[in-house]
Image (cartoon, rainbow, N blue to C red; front, side, top):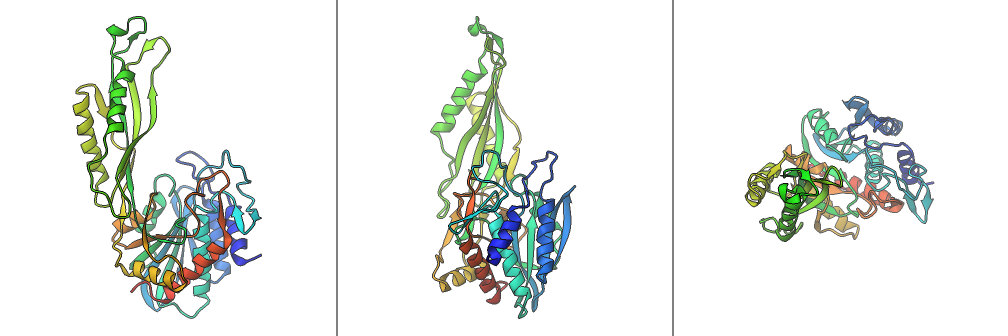
Length: 375
């Protein structure tokens, strides 16, 4: 069994489903497994609690330059219901390892751990490396925010955030703002609908408007268009009652340079004009910022260089999903998204990853550090 297979199997066998603010074991067992594996391979690591019973794990490989390259991958996974493979067996078939989190993002975590162990074995790397496994990426991003408040080094020059990018360099991704829209009707008896105001009927006007319009934002060269879509609808209290209220949830994907809260305010004004006095928008229940790292940042050019040296795709890409990288970038740290696996396999019923790509990702990170990713 290869080191990559043995490690990734160990990580997959440690359940780490995000409890999403409910009670549950969360990521603690995985954090301990990561710490212990790293300690057994010469890398000093510590557990740092972010939420009760839900810790990050952070390790440091000292380098000649105290400035650090930050390697971040998340510990948590989505739920396992409906999976067609054993979510925790770590079964290997035809060079792929199956299980929840194998692709998103324990494959990246394993690659970063293998790289850290190799770098710690010497010679001393040109820059310090900080490896962090963080909680809560799949829900409210509190792990990476906690990490940024508790960095173990005085200066972080750049970051690589592990996600399934197919070993491509991701320098941009969309952000998101999600909010609830409510139409306000007047409930009544279904036998006399003309004496009531049907909130569901009002909502059909909102749905038609949202379907017929697009955000007035210039396209991004790597990400394309900003988008807005309805993801949930709720309305009505009984089969013989004209509904007085109806609600939808809207998912608005933002582009680099857009402020999600300003986007929500503009949407609120736009929809208020559609149904004056009959509509309200709740404050956003999800806010996340887009990522737009300059292509000439040293960590980006360094990663593209090592990709090219191994005959891989050395172009920069935009990613369709949100990541912890945007929070790191907002803290002033240039960040690139990179890791093995395909986003098409993430969250899937038979989630898996090619083991050879996990090993290759580790080699690429070692190459990047050896070529001094801190510039």
